[in-house]
Length: 584
Image (cartoon, rainbow, N blue to C red):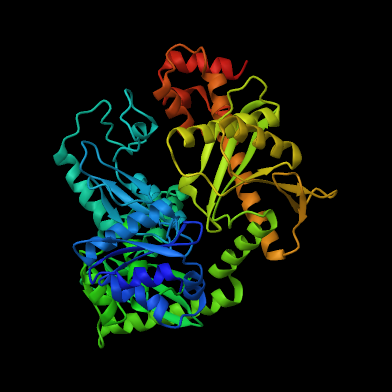
């Protein structure tokens, strides 16, 4: 410890609060919370540490504290500070992958169902999560086929094809009361909860009736629906008859690494399993509790949460609104034992196949050493995409601590005159990005990576000089075989990438910005193609355009549609004009 740290530790209060660890460059590298700041912070420096904790402590030059009224208040503050500063050594569930839910929009005038990855709208009733999103879409298709609820997100002014197929009550032209919808909502709710024996009986009758009259096509359609419903009803590992929503957490440790497994039960059925693997920082039970707390910042909380030991239960009971349990016997304990087995298997697999968090840290350290800059924990990468100068897009992706931070991704519709010129497009994209960050006084990245070597770096250097901003720039240089094999720094010096792991990390980043640029460009191009056809057709406004694109997702499908099919979507006179234009 240096003298500053010794003095700071002596002055620490016996109060709850947050502590922010700084390195010698005054960067925040770790943020934590404590019930007693003096005891918690001093432990880092007065006890022997190992692994990632040891590395973090080694880089601490000084720290600051924020005293709070309670440990719960400290935890909330800690989460907010982590999301703001993205410290290198904190665990952040930044791009948490959500399993989809089926949302029943029942509190609106004309209910409907949709797929969503967020379950925060209190006007909806949610079912799931569903580990298999395609299965969730199949269930929505079944609901839309079986029940005459609305299929449109917004009510049109004229009936669509579903009305003529008798699959919708057509609130666009009919006055449908709430009383008419209630039994339909109840049936949908029962189907999604697995209480569908009556529906299954009716479907079996329809299959037999269609088969008797030799309508095998309709019989096959209902047989497919029957198979899907039977799939929904399948019993999984354990079924709790009380139908309570529950989450089960258990963990396993090995060589200073931890794997946390989660089983989610909804309406008594096991619907999803997830695992999280990290290197441990600090005390294990507190570390696990913070991961669980972060998880519920982005995911709906069930009625009951089960954890594998009483210390974690005590931690979480102060923070979560759910009932927290840590059973030592019984059925719930048996489930936790199964969850722990899954945690062990996940950690074994992680050691065998996955990149570990400390690998990313060391790779970013090496990248900083190669470029003679501080470790680039926050990196932004840029790329352009266009087709012969049309629908030009500038794309930016962000990586924090070596992982993609998709909430920070940005796209730029190129507005310059020469959209075929990649250098001009890059100049416009970088100027718009960093002039805005400067105006809004937001955090700049530690490193900018462009794709294209010398010329792109020179453009980036020019933009940063014009904006009077100092950010290191690097370019990915390709070999004669058009494969990335070197890095070029801001001074145009070339550095071969000798470490294969670093090469793969940079390649993964490069692939991600290419993917984002191309997919964004394709979306813009598709929209442009539709607009070129829809332009100058009287009576074809934005809402009608949206309906057409939803009904016929590609130009090919739209062109192959009959005039009668188009008339189901838009008025006859508008349909005639569009049909004529399509076939000129």
